[in-house]
Image (cartoon, rainbow, N blue to C red; front, side):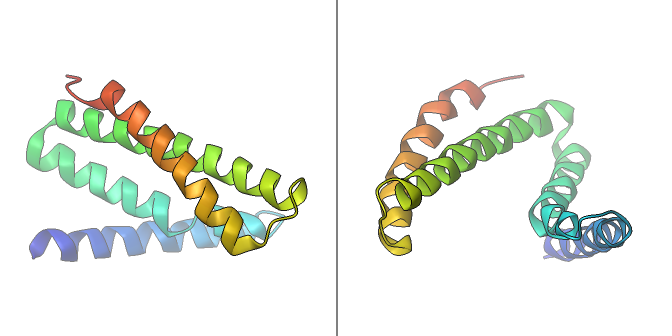
Length: 115
């Protein structure tokens, strides 16, 4: 339970800092770019380093990177289906989810067992 409270507090502080940074920078879309997900990831990695050591946190960051790559491929695929195939948003999202699963699970073996 304490770990969740700590993630909440650290994530909140980092989200607030990125929000202030986004408010200073132009365009305003930077505030959304540096939103909750990177902040929670940083908090999670900090806790992982504290509780399990740097090797474990390195493995977790590799898995986060693989997830980010899969999300980027998913996003490109959704855009292509929306623009070129003129699919509805829900259909494009569901079809692209299959692509996300394939990419994510194919990158997963690269992150497992690294020390």
